[in-house]
Amino acid sequence: MYNRNDQRFYGFSFIELVDGLSKLMVRGRTHKFIDKNLVNILLNILENKNQEECLLECVSNAILNVSFDEKVQRLLDNQRTIEIITTARNESSSPLVQKNCEAILWTLNRIQHRGKEKQSFLKTKTCR
Image (tube, rainbow, N blue to C red):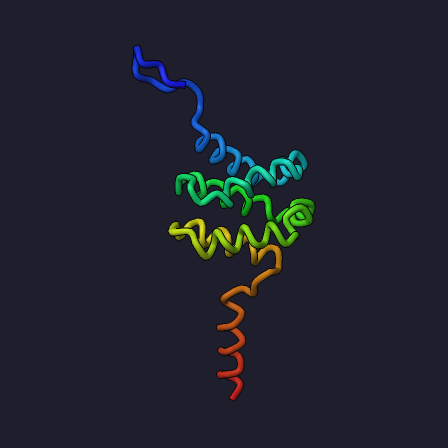
């Protein structure tokens, strides 16, 4: 909330809250508090392309941080979620959102890691 008298903000902006949430999601113990409702809120924000780039970066980072948890992977493993994440990866102008979405898809075993293609090429190249 903005106070015009002393020109200060009180509290946190929505972006700051999502950024803090993404940092909390790094810790495995906090994953037990994540449910389908929270995942849907984050996906709805990511799906809305009219959001500020900074907010989309924080949301994609939050989803990436929890995507390593098996329970959360089951929540994320559906066609709608994959479409939202793939669209965000392909259409975002932010390299961070693109990178985060690609990492989420990799974590969900939806795309192959880029390094594996190079490694298999190098193995066949050196074996000859």
